Structures are given as C-alpha cells and as structure tokens.
Figure 1 (cartoon, rainbow, N blue to C red):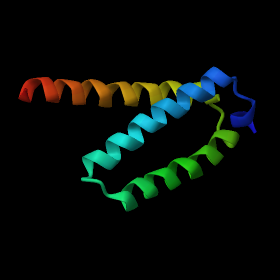
Figure 2 (cartoon, rainbow, N blue to C red):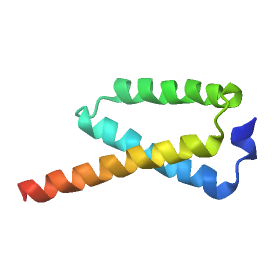
Figure 3 (tube, rainbow, N blue to C red):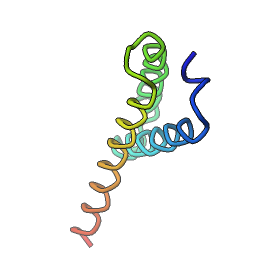
Length: 83
C-alpha cells in the first residue's frame, strides 16, 4: 500500500491539506456534519484508488495542497474585502 510507504512529510502535508478542505467544507455548509462525513467517506474510498492508479501518491498530495491553497486564499480575500 503506497499510502503507508509514503515519507512522513508527504503524509503530513496530505493530512494538513485534507484538514483544511474538510474544515472549509464544514464551515461553508453552515456546519452540516453529514455533508462533511460524506466527503470524508468519499476521500477514504478514493484512497483505495491510489493503490491501483498509475499516478504516484505525491501527485495527489500536490493536488490537495493546491486545492487547500485556493480555499485559504479565497477565504482570506473574501474576509479582507468585507472588512
């Protein structure tokens, strides 16, 4: 299983980016826990695809980091515009 063989910093980067996206989703849906749960289940099931997908785990980590960065910058920009 490639996820278990990933270096610690790669795994940590993935987890931090995943946490940012889950927190944003929870807050953006007004605190809807079932939606956050559904997204978490989808990501967990998606990790099974990483094992059979030809792209390495690092590619998925970079994708998650890009998404978390877009979310963070978008939230920061929205707050600075309304302040």
